[in-house]
Length: 638
Image 1 (cartoon, rainbow, N blue to C red):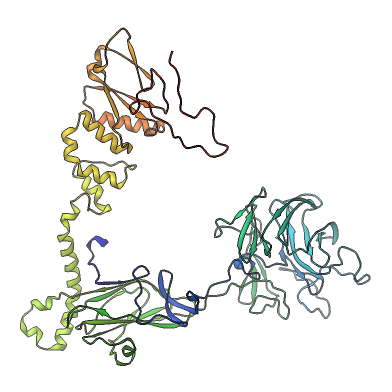
Image 2 (image 1 turned 60 degrees about the vertical axis):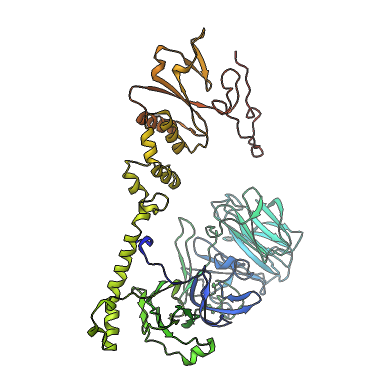
């Protein structure tokens, strides 16, 4: 049943009207209001109220953009090669998803092995003698063919150096000295490499700087997106650099897809989703991780696990007292707007009394009714038990599984109950227990009958154009044989129905056509109509109307001309629709001419302001889109 036929509640609790708790919630775990819902949540008391637990924010330095991209210092190829920048060990570590390499004896980071080492020349000046590799990235082979394709780019914070390494042959392809200590590096889909330093970014192409960009001084991470943008993350927020180097605020964060998506943990197996059409999802089964997503026994982070929202398994919420206004008030029912996931349920109880208890007395003196159990799939509406009393309190007990939670978006209290029991003879009232059962038994019919009577009482509103619900407008218009076009808005349709009798009295006249065209085009001013017989005959066989030459003929008594501004007829489809509308409403023996007048003033042709001369929009166009000939057009006729 639509809302039109529903009984209005006596009391409403939601985010707009307030949840009206018995006492304001303090720092706790329980059933708490957050946003638009009442649900199980954890919160602490902050300066501006409750602060609820949240997943990893985008700006967390260790959060890899909220856990959506690989952490710094991790790179994965489409073939399953996994690389780690081990800053403490001054090395790059390597393993594979399908074929883990043979482990070196005594390896301290199994199943990883160093990608290379210089046992004969430790601490030398060779570029591969890394000091403090903070981040690394892979340039995909399809992005930049040639010597820089399929290379591993390493940012060494110990020597302020960027190193391109052939990951197959372990050969240095190029090095680039930096004027500052690098913080992060990322390969863009086009093959360029972005390097982040203190307040500055350098975009490198084929081993050389292409351009420099200023960013926030405290930016700490780079995220490359598949559409070519690069995101720079700092404590204050996230900014983006477009493909052409333009810096701006991040837009459409939720739909942005990183080139290197974050790994996920399923049981004890590390997974990487495929991030291109030719790459399947990878599973790294031999990598031991701790609960923080780090390689077990080290500080090397492989997966940033977004913090699971800590949901309490249960919570209780008690409303403030609601006043029925009279002793012995008969409360009717409670209706909830709620979503109950699997493994969740609600228990609802009420306390009704003629005594106005203080809030601290409700918990100790209240005698609550037996709880009504709401499980997933059951109706979220129940009768108030022991319903006679001026004041009512509502108690909701919520239960979840630690992950999912019931979510309540609204609570309605109805009353008083108008029971059919009052219409039955006295014997049905003698036994209180039987009378209470019969009252509850008849309540379902009472509810249906009440809503049916409400609809019956509102029939007059349904037949009133200004009050009828939107769902009834087309139906009401069919009474007057209106077939509304899809382009006509609700307000226009209501006006057409309200003025139907007047319009049908004017149908076939100029006044009727004017009214119809105003409805169709939305014009405030009356469209200009010209009956051809009113044109003065002189020495000229034609006259100019709306910028067009109109011939003077003997058949002028049965012809008329309509002039509309171009804003009301923007294209050929609109012109055809208006022509069909006029043809359906004009007298059958007449012919018409439709003229669309362009903005401007042409002396002798379009010089009647408000008729066939319309002033154009005087606002200046955006920079770079203006033309010298788009001002007020004034042309002298020949």
